[in-house]
Length: 413
Image (cartoon, rainbow, N blue to C red):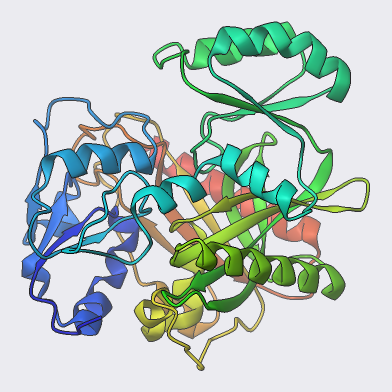
């Protein structure tokens, strides 16, 4: 990629990633004043930068939408006819074009690899162990089949084909469970595609990450994390290194490279991670591919430091900075639409990492005014270093204690 990029740059990431902006400017030779921050309400952090709205600010156009939905809104309203770079969570929902530059594949190939049904079919063809999944084209069709499926599998996981962080995902085992799920989506369309998967009883969930180069080669990021899950489906953060034996770590990384190679053969390029479930039956299941940026990207920033944007392009970075001990990163939850006045943004992730102790916190959503567009439920990130000698139980207790501390602090703002 030309380090002196002269086209228009649209930045669709929220301000969790603003700490990466100086290095982005350096890597691509772009002055921050020339970046267009789309649909941004992060006034305090970005008040001297160029911000635009693609629709009227008071219109609640992005409430409870996934990144690909937001991309479709943006791509309808932005001028993508000339030389343009788009920095977004995913290429799904974005068009392809000779003048459009993205760090992850866009167009049909991105849509395919962010579709959980397409992934299930792919896993089966690759003979990878994965939860049995069914596809329904509307909610009523799924309701009719529920008794048969619960009789066959017991508990089920309902989800949308394209989602992140456990959003719109629920474990159900009865008609009452399904009715509660129906109420939770009453503002959305019930004539959409729904997926139902068998629930795999488990104690742990893991993720790995890699980057596919444009030539199809795969750059292994050498990071396997344990995912911290709330109420069986909601992703709240990660633990690194994972509490997992070496044999299963190798297995996860082997599968990741194998899947990455197939992604590259299909035309996909860019960052991706894979979620795994370690079942109570002692078997490792592949759950899904996230062909996009995600929470693990923040960990990658901690590990690769100044080489982060080279890593995002699959350029080998040799000076990876492994933590001295164990590392936890977590989301800080808030309420949609509330005012977060009084919270301060502290995005000093690398400085915190270099110290090797203590913790950081970064708040990012509406820090000096009411959140006008309530498009997410979490408003920040925290990180902390712990000892490798701490048990998994100790680490999880510390993780949830830190979550509650921040939540209580926000309630008092």
